[in-house]
Length: 184
Image (tube, rainbow, N blue to C red):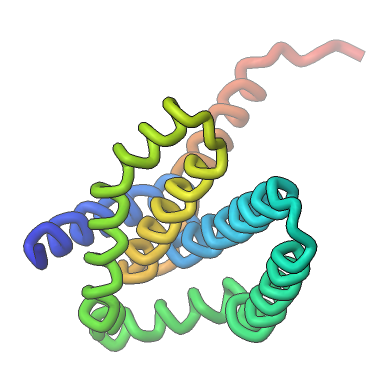
């Protein structure tokens, strides 16, 4: 399974580097955005379960648990900015060091990759047969977490300009150069 993880990680890094040359945004930026999306999906998932439950004790537990999760998010993920994380990644790459998450998080990535693959069919089947919408959110959370783990293990390219932005600027300059000038 480590060979599969390595292959997926190398593919993810290639895609991230192409994404960076197109947009100028790093894998750290993309991971941060997908983390925000997964937090939103998580709270929608919990809210859905909250309203499905008729038990007051369960609702209080879910509300307290979500409050605790949100408190922990403010202490961990929301504490550092994207710019600080990118600067750290650039410094590490400039020194010629690989991302320590490539090795450190390998078992966690493999576990989530396995969950993504193994649970996809049973959760889809539960959705189709039992019409349980929250199982789709469950699979979405597993997949988003897997993608974020792979994104965080990649090394970015050195800072570069957005290829798409440069292309659009060139198109605008060409269009403005071809536009007829009006006589005043």
